Image 1 (cartoon, helix red, strand yellow):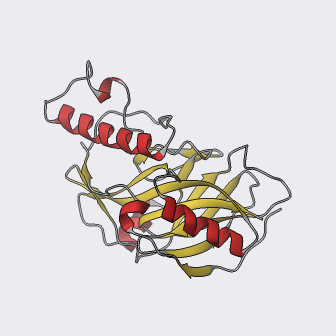
Image 2: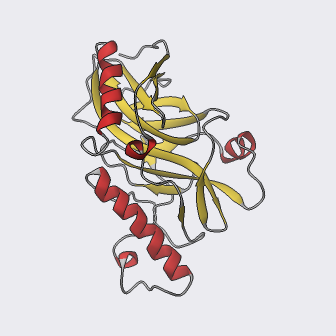
Length: 236
């Protein structure tokens, strides 16, 4: 059962440092990669894996690393992800394993035009699990928002939507045109008689509840914007 809900705007005391990992980094453009998302566990392990990927690929591009050693021998940068057969339009590091896949479905040209990207700049995403113990203030915001609706909070993911230019990643601003994100509902959280939605928490403590816009009982699709945010599935 799926139904629209009224979008809510809340405020929660939150520091950006506890919401997200650092959003800047260097990544070798055009490095070899597969499309399979890398498995992982907690947010801390995912964060370290993101940095390993970035550092190893940057080093190999500049001749400082090789496929025979370091993180590059263990993992490659996944450039796409898919949900229920829908493949992401945006290249990036897709590491979120607490949900059944993530995919940005807005076209690249729409994102580029909507956020004023210049020649040589391409949309890029970094998505990984959120660790509720380490990001306890973000989790408190999620729990409060869910409780206000009589909902149950589920898995949460960190999402950074930015751009890649000359091998360097930077965040795009949160003020911009809508970007559609699709998330697969994990089997241990799925429930056929429930309505699903997403709680979004932004740096500074802005919290919103986003409506599911698709009709697939196995996925949640919602409109957001670029920049940093935590997104948590809820059901009620």
